[in-house]
Amino acid sequence: MIIPLVELERATNNFDKAREIGRGGHGTVYKGIMSDLHVVAIKKSKVAIQREIDEFINEVAILSQINHRNVVKLFGCCLETQVPLLVYEFISNGTLYHRLHVEEPKASLPWVDRLRIATETARALAYLHSAVSFPIVHRDIKSQNILLDDTLVAKVSDFGASRCIPVDQTGDMTVIQGTFGYLDPTYYYSGWLTEKSDVYSFGVFLMELLTRKKPCSYRSSEEESLVAYFTALLAKGDLVHVLDPQVVDEGDKEVEEVAILAVACVRMDGDHRPTMRQVEMTLENLQVPHQNVVMCGTDSSGYQVIEGKNRDDTSRQYSLEEEYLLSSKYPR
Image 1 (cartoon, helix red, strand yellow):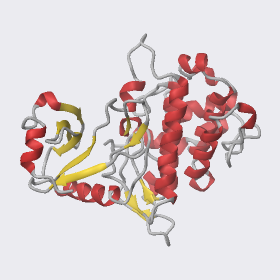
Image 2 (spheres, helix red, strand yellow; image 1 turned 45 degrees about the vertical axis):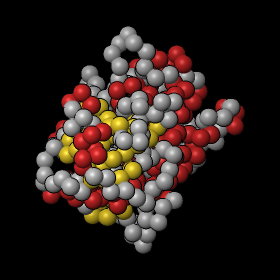
Image 3 (tube, rainbow, N blue to C red; image 1 turned 180 degrees about the horizontal axis):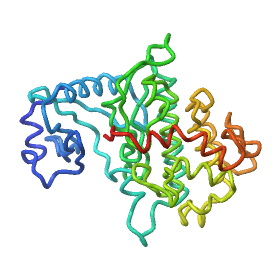
């Protein structure tokens, strides 16, 4: 739907600062009330540069193909500005990042909600990878890009960096895009983008849900990234040292199984990571009574989801990932 600029100006009181609901490196999101009283979110770019215009075109092209309960809906756009404005459904509870990383001692999201949100996000990614005409790689999965509606249902957002991969190809050579801490090291070094790059980012996302540590900035006392530290602790059976105490209190056996799944997703060799469909099925099974759980393709028979059996082996496996985390200059 093409929406006139004057309608969006009225809806936002001429883009009043009081209507801002989000601000990032690419622009500002405003809450708007349309003439039919429909509430929307309007994304307005900061600057008119070709990259912003390209990302707008890309997002429209991607979202016009998608109809999924756990993907934010694009209602329309306005073409009267230098960088077109995008109009989305309004998601009332903001980002998962802000709900998860509340200041202590305030309680964060209950474990049952974290597990459900992880499942819904996996469901959306599995849909993008395998249920649309061209597989879509999101390329920037992180808690800031997961929105929560009034019942805390997850909605994957921000498709400006996403790429369609032709069905007859296994990947695509691209300029590196992603977020520090979540970015697949294999993709970072090679530039070769596949669906398994989203799987890696999702694995980091699971670790964030389990620990409430911020992957972009977290360093352990030994200067390890969240991925390397989490993986080494799981290998030693000491994961409790990094888990969010609320998860320890509220979770059960499924916490360990989500941790195993997370480490499977961040294997250095993308071919050895599960698919998002396998990840989705594993998380879906964790929603049912525990005796019915079957881990889908993630080597759950004993802890052998990473190469090596001790901390030294784990550290060697993640040397490339550590090198990337220390040198990356590509936050978004």
